[in-house]
Image (cartoon, rainbow, N blue to C red; front, top):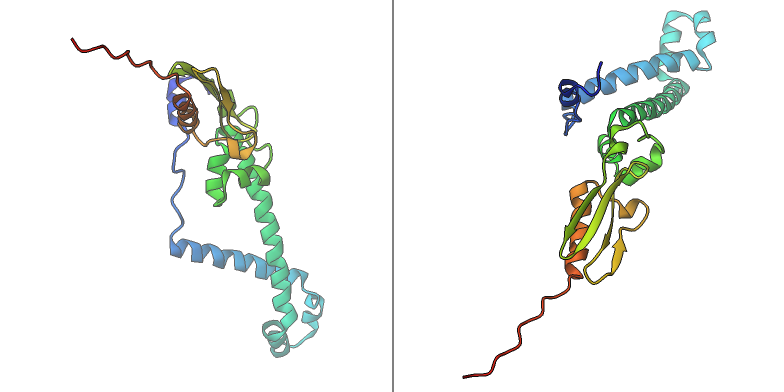
Amino acid sequence: MDDENPYWTELLKLRDPAWTDPADDQQRALTAAVLRLAYDLGGEIWSRAGELDAMGAPTRETVVTRSPDRALATLRALRAVREAADAAAEDTARKAGQLGAGYPQLGKAWDISRQAARLRWPGAVSAINPAANREPVHFEMYGGEARVSYHPEFGGWWWIATAANRKTAEAPEGDDGHAETSEEAAAAAGAFLAANAVPTAEPAPTGEM
């Protein structure tokens, strides 16, 4: 596949939103399926599992359904499910990051902030992410100039500017200083340029004739 082909470029463009939330019946079905998996695993890791064959059917049924340690075995299995889900989420987040998703999208999918996503999956948005190669944006406004660039390690856009009065400023380093879009970063830079523009001199008043 030719990644430079306009057809594939357009077809594989990141879609936002990338999903619809599961319906209530879908969520219930998923919960039931997970519980079945955990229950089966719980039966395998249950400390009484090796004793069941020696029990008669009525006794075995009673022990399985009424023993608190059988429920605890299932609970332990659910912890393994959670650990497996976390591992699968990390693998999936890194794949999404390699294919073009940024930390804002990863955070939205996991219902956490962009900053929290970067802390949860550091390095997920890697250098091979197409977003990492976005060209910086340079513009002039109010007699000054600004540069907006994408920092993949933070999953956001950062700006630096020099105003007409020669004052300079830049977005803070770190998560708090990075905007989710280039437009947001450019707006912050533009506000700085506007606030530090050189006022136009008013014409001197003329005397009355």
